[in-house]
Amino acid sequence: MTLNAVPCIQVLLQEVPQAFRSLTHAEALEPLAPGKWSRLQILGHLCDSAINNVSRFIQISYEPQPLLLFPYEQNHWVAAQRYSQTSVEEVLSLWLSLNQSILRVISDLKPAQLSLSCKLPNGDNVTFQWLIEDYLSHMVHHLKQIFPDIDFL
Image 1: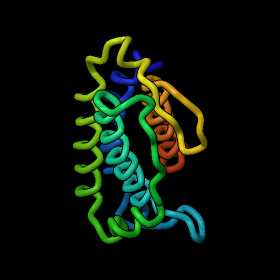
Image 2: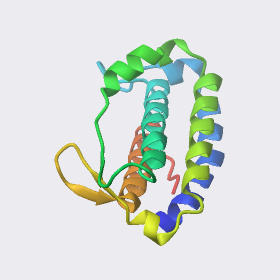
Image 3: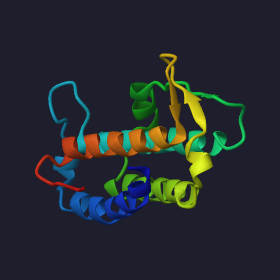
């Protein structure tokens, strides 16, 4: 799937802003369920994921193998970023910019680079290819939460 990751992300960079701009401000800010994030906060979470992953995607090329991956406290990140008090356009702009950075990092990877290894917090070893695929799957999973009626990919 990694060979498809670049065009998939390119498609998402076109479709997600359009879908988000179709929401009213109230729809973007309304939690999806009691105690859950709003659509805007989920998009913010995807920004936080991109921040963490672009760093990983760069580090894997020069750090000793396997690259040790550390989790981040997603609820703390969303709260600290105050996405619920940020405009849709600002969060969209951040999401677009971060994913354009990811595209620059992964666009011309060679097979040898895709086989570089990472160690997950649970101790499992995975490849860089797996990490890219997981990033894309995670993004699509959350986009389906935001827009259950849209099939982005």
